[in-house]
Image (cartoon, rainbow, N blue to C red):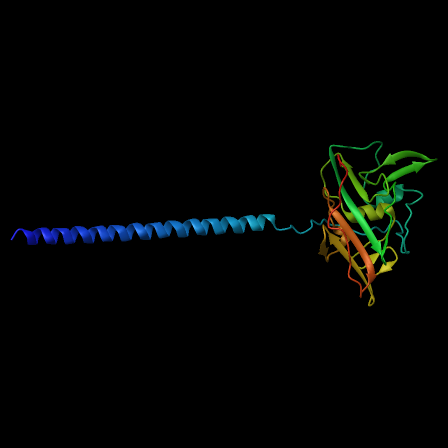
Length: 231
């Protein structure tokens, strides 16, 4: 007669163990689900953080105090740089200011031909001698744009083109105009930019490509530029 109570106790013990085992399994599943959810969230955050950021823009007002070139390339620098530098809203300095110092690169392709970005943009030359310089300038025809400033404020591509003396807007590059048969396309680090290129803010190691050609052609532009050591 003592066997029956023992049998009931064992059944209860077994049932309790099964309940505890089920609880452990459920808890384990919940932990796995939580880990997966966190992992997926981290992965999503990582993907979002590595996604290309859109180009930064800054306000730019086309100048009215100087006449900008509305002619086909090539575009020489102005004989007298001072009024163009002033029209760009830039200071004329006696020497380079290096508190803020970075570089961007500009490529221009017009009807399949590379257009030279000339040396000397942003320099004031008098009697063959350099007498002034501004914060945005070019030292050579490589397309490298030097930004050297005493303060970290936004500078735009429109300012560079103003001191160069060349018209630039969403539909115009000098005397090259977008129309029913020609396209003016702007790319930043290989990605199409559909806004006004004059508002593009210059940033460190930015690759800006301006392309003009027949609407039947597919633009081919660089996605990056190999800056020399130290730039």
